[in-house]
Figure 1 (cartoon, rainbow, N blue to C red):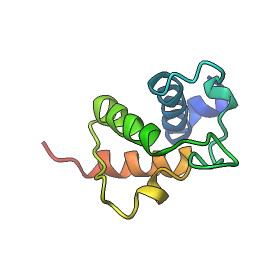
Figure 2 (cartoon, helix red, strand yellow):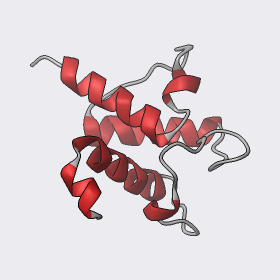
Figure 3 (cartoon, rainbow, N blue to C red):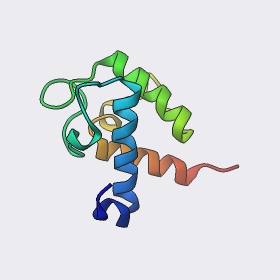
Figure 4 (cartoon, one colour):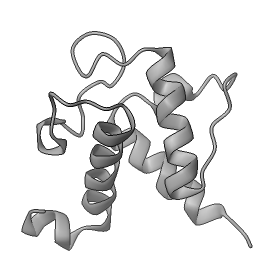
Amino acid sequence: MTAAAAASPDLVLEHELKELIVEALMLEDRTPAEIESTAPLLGEGGLGLDSIDVLELAMALHRRFGVKTKGDDERNREIFGSVRSLAAFVAAERGTKTT
């Protein structure tokens, strides 16, 4: 992890999410460092994730971070738009969780 990532909780979360994406989706041809935080996750021009990949990633997010998305949520395209938007969602959901 870089010094910048160690200094910022947002960057640490983004790095964790990149590792989770590579691990959960078994992206053997990618490393977390190769995933741009602002690049699209869906469709062409980024990782090219499809709906099955998003489902797998959503389950991995729930296991790792305890956050849930809904399959019919119209915000899913925005939430899974990039690593940065996914990090913002996870941070917001974890911040609102009550025990």
